[in-house]
Amino acid sequence: MLFSISWRNLWRHPTRSLAIITSVALGVLAGAFIVSLYYGMGNERVRIAIEEEVSHLQIHHPNFREDFEAVWNFQLDSVDAVLQRMPGLKARSLRSTAQGMLANAAGSSGIQINGINPASEIATRKLDQFIIRGAYFDSTKKNQVLVGKKLADRMKLTPGAKIVLTFLDHEQNIQASAFRICGIYETSNAPIDERNVYVDLFEFNQLLGIPGRGTEAAILLTGETEIPTAQAFLQQHFPGLEIETWHTISPETDLVMSSLDISSFIIIFIIVLALAFGIINTMLMAVLERTREIGMLMAIGMTKIRLFGMVVLETVLLTMVGCPVGFGLAWTLNKWLSETGIDLSAIAGNLMKGFGYGAIIYPDLPGFKVGQIVLTVFVTALLASVFPAWKALKMNPVQAIKR
Image 1 (tube, rainbow, N blue to C red):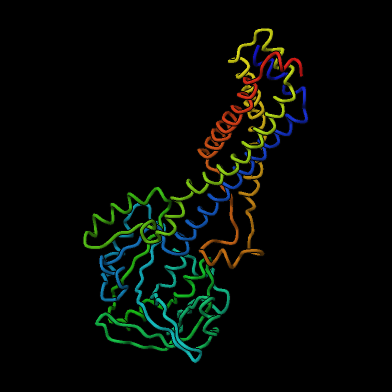
Image 2 (image 1 turned 180 degrees about the vertical axis):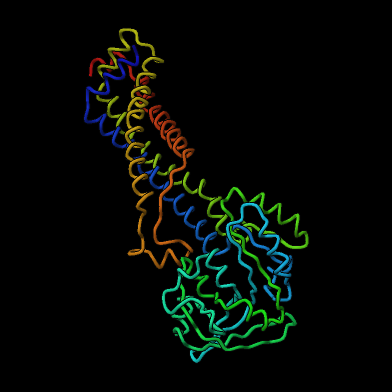
């Protein structure tokens, strides 16, 4: 009976009820959209970190990441032979890296020089697809180098121009060699583009004095779930080397993913807090408008518990109507945007690349977040109904009837 009375009370003032339903629906829609946008950005950052930067796993000498010097190297052939037998392998790339200086007539800049196998980098990172000027490595030419767009713009570099790379070999002797720029690349991470150049692995190893050896092996797997198995496999075969996942190599990306739950909850909390004030205001107005009616109900014997329950139930019913509407809209919007994406290139393309994000974001709404939003909105509505219900209980039946 209480349910029937509460439901009928809602539609005695349909405009007011629809206002609350709309508020709840918009609150759910806004919360779901922002959460899906947060997770979409997080997924995009992880995708870029894995596919364009560090891959799923990397192998180094235990001391290499302390100073990134060529003295900390390992035999490439023995590592590659094991990698070919590794379960879950999609692609691998063997590299030699060293810190150095790039110099031309415009000045000099500190960089990281990466000696790569051009064919392997196509498989692991699709590096050839990021060339915006010039061309990828030509196997018939020597001493070629790829430079990032941001570095090229700052140093006034163009395809065909000569530069000098200076670095330390494996014996800590200074080496300098001239290279000709074959192409300029641009990835989704401008800071990395600015400090990384790429040369041929064989040529670079000759200059470093470590032929047949390298400092890094990057491994791309068939999926994220393969990481524990692959890491254990490599640790078993290379106990003297360090096997690191992208979580360790790119801690800022891991931090982004680990903070998604907290940051999205804060946004949801702000939205439902605003929603709570709207519910309190509307329901309080509804209670005050029905002062005489509430007085009559109390006079004919309605207990305070039932009166309290009636007001709370009215709020809950409105929320139960608004939530499905909001999630219906959120699901439709998320499905559409997850396929088409949100293109931010026109308004924030350079800003996104400055933080290592792609210009197109594909929203993603995890299932557990749907339940979290529903529960948060429901609890908020329940708490917001307490004050109007308490105001109804404080009414004096005799005075209420006289009004």
